[in-house]
Image (cartoon, rainbow, N blue to C red; front, side):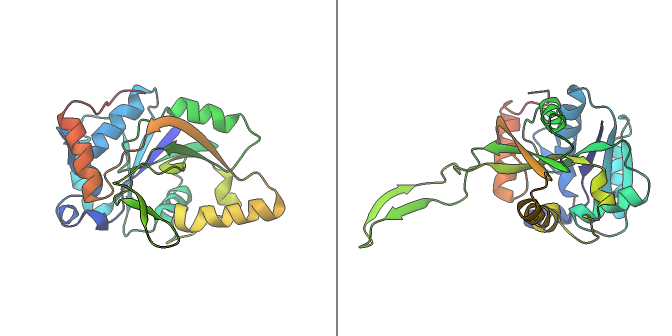
Length: 241
């Protein structure tokens, strides 16, 4: 199954670091984030990898993967995560009836084969999200009574809800059904619309597989610092879960 890694975002939450390097190429420990991702995916037996990158960053990615058989897909300008996938579809770069989407700043240890098996156990959902628990908030939480007396304070607790890891399986018919649009985002634009139709018409469009692992990405400075610390301590695995 093809795995598409989206690396064309602007990385605005990582400024000023992303002024000098694309987010996916920012070092985590002893190697770029994208190499952790590619090594991890390949260790699970997935060899058909496509990276969607900004054309202006093409020389950097071509140099990084000069020794690794991955396909590079180039976009002239950022189109949003859904828009990038639509462009790849229209350019004939998406193969097979299903594919995996993997955000290029995502370091969560997801068992991709388990995710695919879950997806294929249902009758053709358009999307199956890889969900995890335990995301730690960047702020403390406080509870109070009706008189404003503080009852508890917890610094940066884990969120007691499932979150999307930025990894999912998508069925190719999502394009034929007209869901994907240019300059739109999967999480902000496409999935909410699909869920609305799923509720109203009781169609099976989106499923979610809860996987037992801790969420980790480099989407913000604080998240990158944590991932970098784990990598330097030898606690960030590049192999399969």
